[in-house]
Length: 104
Image 1 (cartoon, helix red, strand yellow):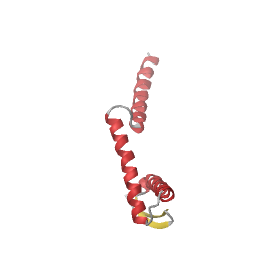
Image 2 (cartoon, one colour; image 1 turned 45 degrees about the horizontal axis):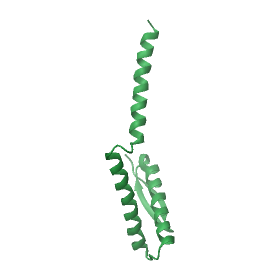
Image 3 (cartoon, helix red, strand yellow; image 1 turned 135 degrees about the vertical axis):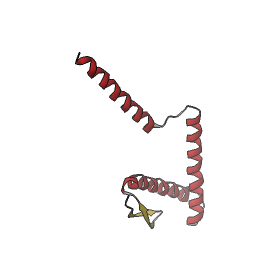
Image 4 (cartoon, one colour; image 1 turned 90 degrees about the horizontal axis):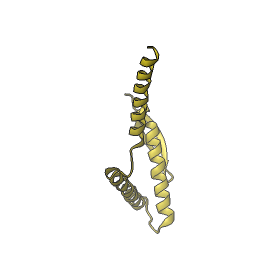
């Protein structure tokens, strides 16, 4: 797995990050989410200073994550990717069974 360098911007500050080509999309999505949350904190409060804004944004995102984890634990939310994989696998199995009966 080869690492690559990407340039991103969070709250107007440039950062050079290292990632694998396979994880670049997810990393860029995370950067976009962090930037949006930090921008929201900066514009919705009197918090000044990038470090304080980052802490407030991190707390907000951690709170969202904890709510989601709790929902999943209580069966109120389902991991979409796992559901997609299960459906795909089930469809393949059904297709194989149907193909067996079509040839008889």
